[in-house]
Amino acid sequence: MEHIVIIGNGIAGVTAARHIRKLSDKRITVVSAETDYFFSRTALMYVYMGHMKFKHTQPYENWFWKKNRIELVKGYVNTVDHQNKKLVLADGDSLAYDKLILATGSKPNKFGWPGQDLPGVQGLYSKQDLDQLEANTPDNKTCKRAVIVGGGLIGIEMAEMLRSRKIPVTFLVRETSFWNGVLPAGESAMINEHILEHHIDLKLATNLVEILADENGRAKAVTTDKGETIECSVVGLTAGVSPNINFLKDSGIELGRGIKVNRHLETNIKDIYAIGDCAEQHEGIGQRRPIEAVWYTGRMMGETVAQTICGNKIEYKPGHWFNSAKFLDLEYQTYGWVFSERNRKENEQHFHWRDDKEKICVTVAFDKETKQFLGVNTFGIRMRHEIFDRWLTEKRDVNHVMEYLKDANFDPEFYAQYEGKIVSKFNSEFGTSISPKKKSWKRIFSNA
Ligand SMILES: Cc1cc2nc3c(=O)[nH]c(=O)nc-3n(C[C@H](O)[C@H](O)[C@H](O)COP(=O)(O)OP(=O)(O)OC[C@H]3O[C@@H](n4cnc5c(N)ncnc54)[C@H](O)[C@@H]3O)c2cc1C
Image (tube, rainbow, N blue to C red):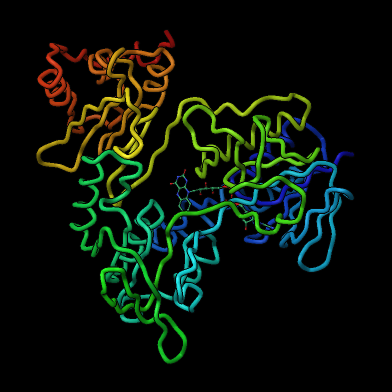
């Protein structure tokens, strides 16, 4: 019986395992060093904040794996020996495979800062990181201040976690405005305000220089390029992630920043595939980045590779870009492409609306010449994924989006509606006289 071995029990690896099982009788083994069972990494913050227990982050009961004949091995793979089709584990055991799927995820970036490996300095990625954060920051008496370095989505999650225990937080962000490599200026400015209002000491355009140790060798302060010394008990390093591939350096598998794969998620070595955060497309698909470190793309890649391995060779086609996240209590969604000033394409025009009272805003991107709708960002309003996906596929123009915007609104009944204000601002900016159509369930659920 063909033996499929998967390294990594994250969303990419376990999706591949589940789908291979659905499609075949192959022997499946999942090896992972982190935890016995798959858990939802995106929910780690809620464990720290006391909203759930760690076991609630495990989507499958422990018996699920045995019942589905998915063998689990807890261990770290040191070596992939593709000539002999075997893995060597850190404990010296070896494991033979017929086909190998690499789904080894990411690790937090470290940029060689002096003091980055001191006790009290940590990232936020793994279950071990969560345990360490719990030990480092049980309360605001033990941890008098934390400094977080790196203003991305994980940094702001870490800030929210620590603030939930009333731990003072200083947040060092290299950029002049929060996440402004991704968000357009108006949105980024709104997030700056939001962070400050949550009593997080946001320091923009500020770089970490060094982490200083106390007499016991534990982090006690950081220095910044603004000449400040900030005392703290804990330093969170959240300056992005990169593929977890160091153990593959001498394997013969082609590596770039990640593991190089083609559209079928095949590496340069026969019978070895890579999926999820660790995979790097030779060329990004459409405007997507070659490495996509998000949850749903890991799941899609897992489903795709399962088909290929089970004889139905298909390409990874993730469709229109979408994503969602939370900035403290502010929900963010994005569909299609809305680029920041830094990355904006020449033809890309933006319409931005922000409510004058609440932290709610929408940015719609469209083509300057053709008016084709390119994408939307929303903060504080929930929008319907399928509707925007449909409009992107149908290449609708921005006027159509404005006219039918109420169809896209996904907020629960009785929530305040903002489409009237949004469209009215659009009309006054672009000289149109669009009146938004009443929401139609028929339109929403029709595929026409
Ligand atoms: C705090 C946090 C919040 C996030 N929130 C979101 C969110 O809201 N939305 C979103 O889309 N994404 C979010 N992400 C990103 C998302 O979690 C990842 O994109 C996703 O988990 C990657 O899945 P994966 O299966 O590729 O890898 P991983 O989940 O990283 O799993 C890889 C596994 O392989 C193991 N492994 C690696 N090397 C070896 C080896 N040599 N031997 C054995 N085992 C090995 C690792 O220990 C790990 O357990 C978040 C990430 C973090 C850290």
